[in-house]
Image 1 (cartoon, one colour):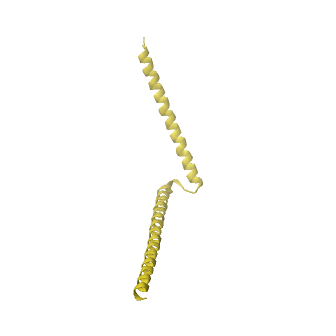
Image 2 (tube, rainbow, N blue to C red):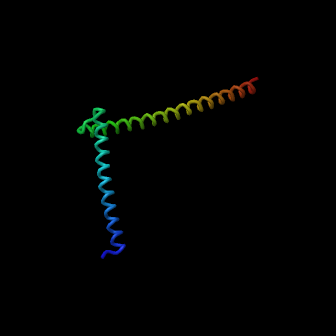
Length: 102
């Protein structure tokens, strides 16, 4: 005769096996769905490596554009600050010249 622990163990094993089978079936459905979507976009099974390279290239391009924007912003700020310092220096020089010469 089986005791309660043996029955619990059998139930656990049965549920675990059902969960594994369900997960495998879900994985198969997802794989088929993704494959169908990619095929509908014109990306065949053999093109997956090329598609991955294309996506990587797009990502690298996006990162380089982001970096260029950051550098451009820094250059603009530097020009503005340099211009302001130059204007202040020119004003100071003018004031000193007027007071010293006049």
